[in-house]
Length: 226
Image (cartoon, rainbow, N blue to C red; front, side, top):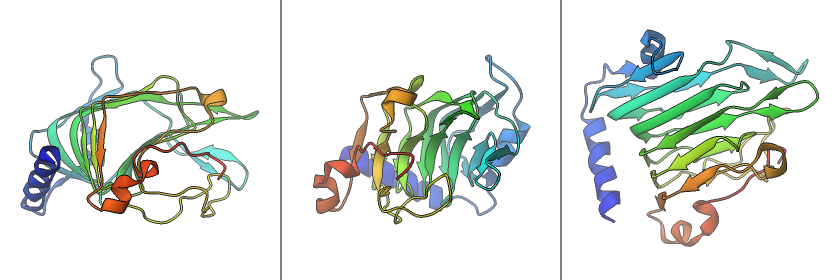
């Protein structure tokens, strides 16, 4: 409960910040290479950064093509910064690059590692999320979707992951009841293809009694195909 109180205090701090916050995308575009990464994003303590961030291309079901910017190796050093994703995601998508996130307060969004392995593409991202606090993340806290080996989730706190309804099938964009949201950590069940991530020393909590007593609201394996 002490950790929950800390999260609430951080949330109040975020809401009291001036409206003109910096977007996370702007911080990404301004970041230079460093530490072996294509972009080393160093954020300011207590500063609010808004909106999501997509690293890598997207898959278009029509034509089954990867389109968009190529992936990059990215590290986000939060220094206690507040990332108000406003319903969006921080996502590394369909590439073999790395995303590392540490020491951030993330609210109202989620983090996703999204990969694919088939006859056309083998694009599986790696990386880590560590020492981050999530408050009311939308859909999930962290979702591994076509990723596993080479991903570490360590010493994070997730409070009140929000059920927003069924997630969507990547092959056609249809909502599927077999992909429920509201879980704190949701790795891929396809461990035979994508491997097993390292998940250790994390803590999750739901303020609703029924949600908190449901183990699947804390940790649930989900399939990519529904």
